[in-house]
Image (cartoon, rainbow over the protein chains, first blue to last red):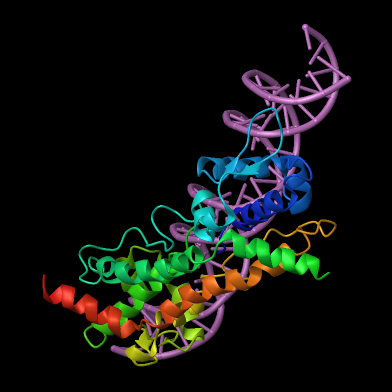
Length: 145
Length: 145
DNA sequence: AAAGTTGAAACTAAATATGTTACAACTTTA
DNA sequence: TAAAGTTGTAACATATTTAGTTTCAACTTT
């Protein structure tokens, strides 16, 4: 199991938008070239980021722009925007435990808190990282090339 | 995206093995009944738990037993045993970023540490919980019924 | 020897992820 | 205002993964 690559694609896209903004029109076609991901998929991701208020795009005129400051966008915002995890939670509980068995009818209750805590640990870590940090690191590597 | 239900099934199975051990033979068929999961799938999970040194099973004689003390089995051990996540990591990096683009050829390096930190946060939380705690909570709920 | 069980392979079915084709709606510019 | 380029979106295709199913040999107990 892996979290959809739309997440890393989205971070890649946003980094490009910041780095190339002003120098060129950052179209879905350009982003497709940089990410190696199909342009329609890119437009889908951009659509989700737009819905989340992270980018601005408009039909016709090409070119995406950030709708927020870099340090106001966390990896968690992106992760939520592209729907990395199910509404049911990160963990998938087997659906038909037997209510006639004392373990079967209670295991869900006994585990839920632990599973939520684990998911929260992951998400809190993502909340603590902003796109500003990722872009800064990227610029640092580019400048050092 | 969700982590395979084999994880919660495995915890359910191990809880049953602890709670019903001595009272009855905890066969894959019994566990299938309690979890609502196909007996062949149960045997597959038991096989992975056996490979990980968590349970003991033998062909012919039915009945699984724990191979370790409850407080020596963490949720992380189970998560690893049933192969919840890919060897490549929890996050799936898009595979063909463009090396001719300064962002494309560096984004992986710029993100990797952050992704590993997020995965580690999840896994550390799982390492901090033992099966003993889950079983204790389960018993508490059963006794309170 | 019979009955019940595990281990495992091979196949099926359903769900998900990603890519592709096609095209209408829109904007810019010649 | 016509042409060119772009976004948004639907419909379809393909590959992978998840879970279930069928089948049966190997094994243990009685």
